[in-house]
Structures are given as structure tokens and as C-alpha cells.
Length: 172
Image 1 (cartoon, helix red, strand yellow):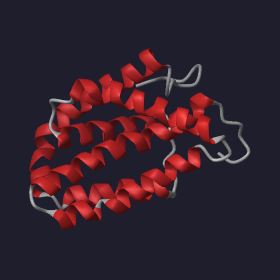
Image 2 (cartoon, helix red, strand yellow):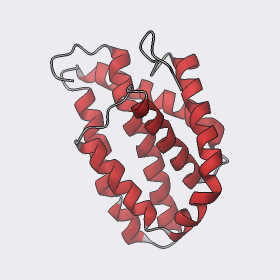
Image 3 (cartoon, helix red, strand yellow):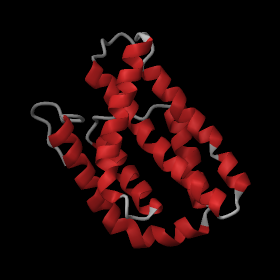
């Protein structure tokens, strides 16, 4: 986004994917710790670091107080869109969030470059693929994840006015 002026909404839209995946990654860490897989949980620290680096990049050049305010706003949005899915499996929520990000990328609203976010995203996906429980759930949650992603996107657009397609563009 070099050379482009970023307003607060732009910055929240840049922060939110990382905030979503931070929360989900922390959930997987907790799950691994409870299952006695401390090594697997510790391996996710690098994933978290990538997402946190992406959050910091989104608020570069913004005063400390304003940066905190923007991150808190993204955290409130994240809680609002993931809140209805608290009773779903963590794997299901993860796959719903991935489908949401894929939809935004397909609509050319979100670009996943080669930076820290992509590194964290790919490392998280690889860690999940190594989890037999998550792999077993993949087929079971495919359809519900697609519905979940649609509900998340609808909520983002109607309640928060985020990730709206450009005028004249066709939204999913």
C-alpha cells in the first residue's frame, strides 16, 4: 500500500485478517496445551509473530494512541463476527475464516502478498494439516464453513461497512 493514503477504515481492513487468525491460532494453542502437545503449541508462536508483524505494519506511521484505538476496533469487529460461532468447533471456525479470506481475495478486495501474513497463514495451515483431528473434520465442516463465511461477510458489510466491493463490482 505504499504511496496510498490509508484512512482508519482501510487500516482496520488491513488489521482484521490478522486479528481473526491470531484469535484462532491462540485457540489452537490452548487446544494443543490441553491435549499435552506443548511442542505443537509452542510451534504456533512463530505464526502469531507473523500476524502481529502484519498488524504493526498496518499502523506504521500512526500515533501510538490512535494505533491502539484501531487495533481495538479491529478486535471488536473480530469478536462480533466470530461471536455467533463460539459453539462451533475451532476447526470449523478456522475453515470459515479461511473461506471468508478466500472470498475477499476472489473479489479482489483483499490481497494476500508475500509478507508476514502469508507466512503466518501458510504456517498455520501446515500446522493444522499435521493435526489428525483437524484433517478428520475437514470434510465434515466444508459445507458449514462456506455458510459461516457468507454470514461473516454479510455481518462485516452490513454492521461494520467493511470489505465492500467497489461500485459496479459484483459481490459474492
